[in-house]
Image (cartoon, rainbow, N blue to C red; front, top):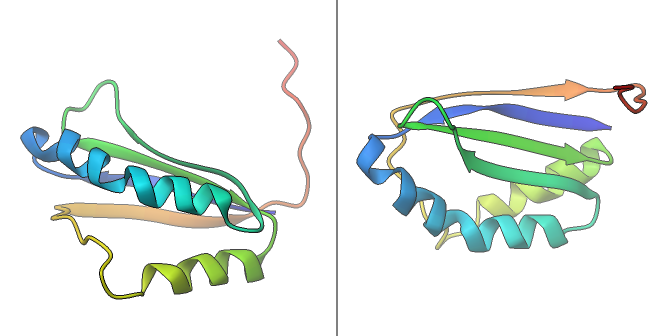
Amino acid sequence: MLIVAGKGYVEPEHRHALLAGLEASVREARAEPGCLDYVVAADPVEPGRVNVYERWVSEDHLAAHLATMARPGRPTPAVLGMEIARYEISGSQPVQM
């Protein structure tokens, strides 16, 4: 399993428009084979921050998704900075609370 997680920054007054513009892309990604979870969300503390979280079954599924992002016509929002990393996960279990 792969996890892609990180954050990006936009001008605070543009964050809502950025997220609204990405809604269709999030829906499409969630419908792709191998996508276990895909979220782009406003950070509750920092007004210009957007958090990204994705879970993919395999490297091949992630690669196929990334290839769809290169298609012409995708919006390219003005992002001030981004820090996103890919993590390979060998196992998981529920958190006991």
